[in-house]
Image (cartoon, rainbow, N blue to C red; front, side):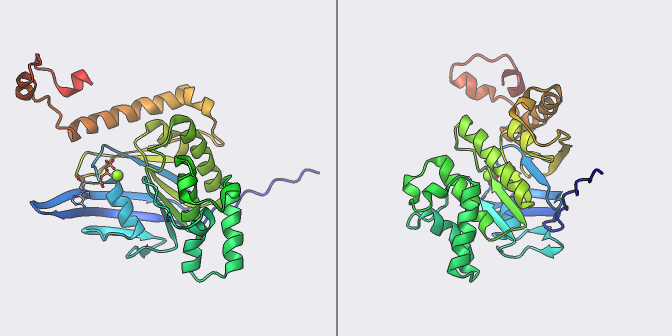
Length: 293
Ligand SMILES: Nc1ncnc2c1ncn2[C@@H]1O[C@H](COP(=O)(O)OP(=O)(O)OP(=O)(O)O)[C@@H](O)[C@H]1O
Ligand SMILES: [Mg+2]
């Protein structure tokens, strides 16, 4: 008799929906329209990335989802409830390390649980379980100053996960790490995402990273950021580094590189400033920025 394996239950929570999102900053010389008409969704348990040129509003969108800022227009909801303030249902990981320097690794991770009123026994048990998953248990009593960049970011991820969020928001979390550490961090994140069955919205500048990690990738336009394209990543899981050399991966990469290149050129002004170049004594031949980069 053969017994069919029971299919893993699909997560039911962590549905992110953004409709017609716009946000303008009030600057001294007038409003700065960071994003407009943005529509995205992340299904429960899905891993979705956002890529786009610098300044196109990616962090702005994530900050609205985290509840740090309110949309100028449009709606941002998680499981149908409008996001109005930060909450334990959403965890955020920032690019810059944001640990409390006066707290140990475990105390940093326990912080959110303490705020939620979780008793000391359960706080410690939950923190130690997650630290173990991230390979950080030997360092639980270290202060952040003794940690490498990769270790700090791992603590940041564990801290964001400690309160049991339904959605994890990550804003270029691996941007400052070397290539080797980055690959290890990607594996740790994937592992935690699969075990905890949460939804992930991941901002990155790295196209390979976006393809390797994601179920879908949104590509944004230059500011004011809008969604230019949505690309489904049909690569099977579990994913391995060797897949990055496959023709399927390279075709996805080619498509995304050209989308991003177009928008990055727009974000940089698009045209070469011939007068400025000639002023610097550099000869120009009427080429555009796209011809030389
Ligand atoms: N506090 C602020 N005041 C005024 N303008 C701001 C402020 N924060 C961001 N901006 C502007 O809003 C736009 C979007 O910024 P945002 O940080 O969301 O971009 P981003 O896509 O995350 O860029 P990067 O990839 O460089 O991190 C940018 O043009 C930026 O200059
Ligand atoms: Mg940003």
